[in-house]
Length: 111
Ligand SMILES: [Zn+2]
Image 1: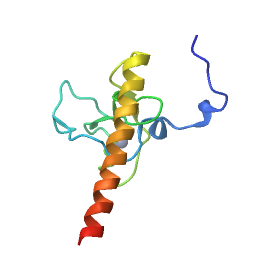
Image 2: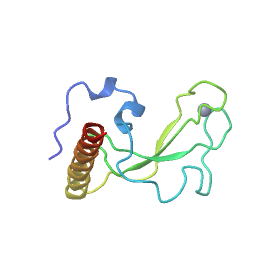
Image 3: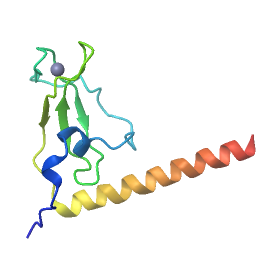
């Protein structure tokens, strides 16, 4: 069923999750969750929402870089989302980003 892509094993977890800005404001700050997950720096890891192509809407934890570097900690909070929901969220993400770009363009043209 799921066709594995060829070179995905070389990508870091971070690049699989991160894809620019969140299209919607967070309903809760990244640190406002419990029980806390601690990264290799022994610091509470923030929980983010992935907006990547593969995993839109899936929450994950990573290093807060509080010590000035990324210890490489990465953990998914959610199981992989249902394919239909995941595709729908990806489509919505793309529409929101397109509209935001358009609004920004119109605003600069107007001023
Ligand atoms: Zn860390």
